[in-house]
Amino acid sequence: MASLARVGVRALGTRCAPVRAERAVTLASYDATALVPAVLGALSSWKLSDILLFALSKSLPPAALTDLVTHITTSFSPHARVGFLAPPLPHALVPAAEARTSQPMHVAALAAVPADDALTFHSTIRGAPRVAVGRWTAQKALWKMGTELRADGLDRTGEWKSLWGRENVDEHVPASLAPLHANEIDAMLVCTDPRPEGLWEGLDARFPHAHLIGGTAALTPFETGREHTLLGAEIYEQGAVGLAWRRPTSHMMRALGGLVPLGPRLVVTGYVRGILTARARGNIISSLNDHNAAQQFLHLVLQRRAAPRERLEAAQLRTLSSHVGRDDDFFLGLYANEDDTMPLLIARIQAGHPVRGTLGLDSESELSGLGRYAQVFRAAAHGDVRTDAPISTEGVQYVWVAPDTTPAEVPSLPQPTATDDVWAWERLFLAGTESSWFARTPGMRTRACTVPQSSVVLCRT
Image 1 (cartoon, rainbow, N blue to C red):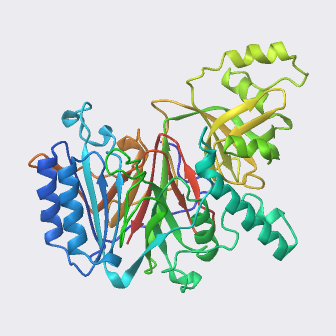
Image 2 (image 1 turned 60 degrees about the vertical axis):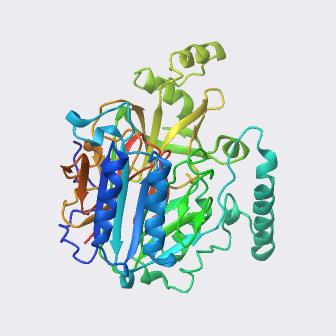
Image 3 (image 1 turned 180 degrees about the horizontal axis):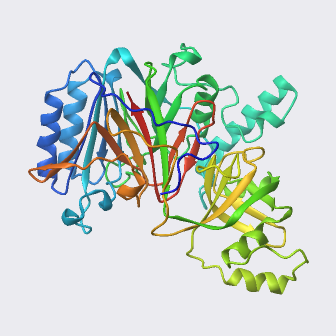
């Protein structure tokens, strides 16, 4: 494992004391008929006055899913429940001797939080319209609304720079959070549809000192008839649901695995932001070490020390590009300092143009000024695990894991106990995500992570 004590890494290794009022358990089984009574049994001992946070696998049979949702909605008041349907957990998180890769592992993650310590929220704040071929008609209203809001902002402020790429120019937050001051929220957990950017902007602006973790809800058109299934006071298809803690006792850790660094860290010397970025769903880097960024990338992938300074002909560039596999995944991490362990942002390299020199990243974040150094990674089944800092297995932990995550990428993951074909992780709320999780620490901006083997942990002490 990579060193955790390098310069620039925040020390989050405070030992967690057990949270006695806050409870959590994650139950998993290949047998839905065994999982349902285990969930009902766990809930029967919890206080109905608490706020219930829950994540249920979309893989559950319809009858089992209906039984669980009906029990939860009839037992807990509308504003004391937050839930969502999630994908099954990665098989690697189950003890190897018990894994059945041909079957989905059904999961119910549960947490009870005293109502005095937290509050729930539901958001309808829109995010960036998705790029989808043939769906312009469905997205037209969102594009038009965003343009009009930015135009109104331009009229008010007389300048455009601060509005570029913004989805929530007025920095709105969900209604239940609107009366609160910045220092009244310590941490937030959020589950969203694939368009969370507007909500991120509002929460980042209003509560800059809070931790935030979250993930994208599972696609559920075949399971429930809804694109996504989010549960709060009602059942929602779009937007976001979340929980905000008032009591200041949170620590956060990210873990990234399955990444092999290629070459040395490079100095970021150029960014581009424009129409090409919008089409690629990401920001663009134009220069690394004062040289064509795309050519630097090609030479690192081909294990050459550095890109040549002389101009390459188009035929030479095509030859270089042909050696990069179409199915290979590459990521770029941006760092504040050359020897930092964890990046400020890491995103998949989505496209490159060796002649123009640009690299397009699959990220909605503004890269300009974000990090001075860049590191190229190749995705691999095995690689060093990079983390912010270790967190004790004591306390209540809320964890989001990417689709291919293994126990190595969740350093604080305890061993589950098994009873009647049901595994149980005590003091742990463990949820999967189909596309990405997102997070931020105080003073930073919320950013998504699409690394296939990764996790984020919020520890409540």
